[in-house]
Length: 390
Picture 1 (cartoon, rainbow, N blue to C red):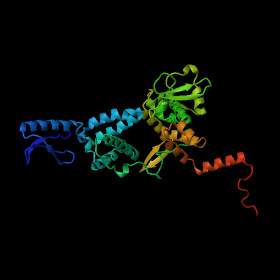
Picture 2: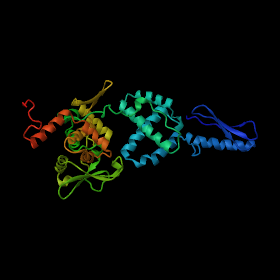
Picture 3: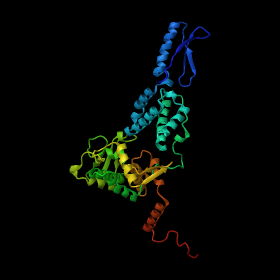
Picture 4: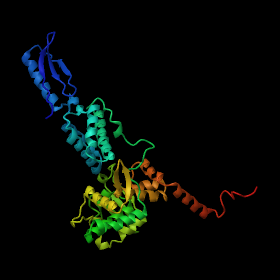
C-alpha cells in the first residue's frame, strides 16, 4: 500500500501552532504555520492539508498520485498521438507499475531509476525493449515537468539512453531478395494448413512490394467508408492509400502514392472481390488475426525457420520480421529515387529517418550505379587511359 501522509499539530516558539508531517519520499520533516493559536482550528487545518497531500491536490503537485498522473498524461498528451504510439507508451508505463509500484510522481529518483533498470533487465527482454521503457517514461516525466508537476527530471542511467551518433543505426537490417525467397519457401513448414499458409504468403508479398508497416497492412481495406487505411483506385487505375490521422504518428490524414509493383499486386484482385480487408493473416487454427503482436510472431517464426538472422547481441539472435522487410523496401528504393520521394513512399514524418536508408547503400552498389551512368552517357573512359603514355 502507498505511504499515507499524516499531518500533526505541533507547538513552536511564538504564538501560532504549526502543521508538520514526514515526507514519505525522502524522509525529511515538512511543516508550515497554521495561522492560528487555536488547537481545534489548527487540527482542522491539519486534516484539510493531510487530505490534500494524500489526494495529490493541485496545490501540492509534488505529491500527485501516480494513478492521477497516468490519467492526466493520457488525456492531455497521449490523445494527441496515434493509437499505436499511445498503446506502446501505455505498455511501457504498465511495466513501470508492475515492477516498481510507484505511489506518487515524486517517488521517481535517480536511485529509483537504477532499481527499475535492474528489474527491467531481469525480465529477459532485449536491451532495445528496456531502452523503450525508459524512453517512454522519460517522455512522461518531461511532460510532467512542463506542466509544473515535478521540479526536474532525474538523470536516467547511461545504458538507457538513445543510440549515439556513430553507433549502429538499425536494430536488424534489410533482408535480401534471396532471403525473402527463403522466407516464402518456409511458410508451409511453419503453417501446415493450406489456407493459412496462402494468407501469410500473400501478406509477405504485399509487405515486400509496399513497404507498409505491419499494422498498416493489417488495417488496409478496400472499403472507402471504413476507418483506417483505404485503397483508392482512380479512373486511370492509379492506386493511392488514404490514411486517417489515427493511423499516423503525427495524426494527420494524408494520401500516399504506391509504387507500380504494389499497385499491380492489388489490381490483380477482381473488382467484385474488392471488399473488406486486403490482408487476412490466418494462423494454424484457421482463425484470422488483426493483432500486430500475434501476426508479427508468426512472421518472425517464418524468418527463423528460413534461418534469416538479422541481428545478434549478447548471444541473443534476432530473426527477420515485418520491419526488416520494410527496411528492404526502403533500401531498394533508395537506390532509385531521391530522399524527398522515398520519404513519401515510406510515409516518414522526419526526413532524417528516411536518410538512414541511404546509409545502407554499399560501396559496391554505388560503384554499380556509377558504371551504369558511364555506359549510358559516355562510351569512352571518363578519365582516359590510366597507362597511356604522355
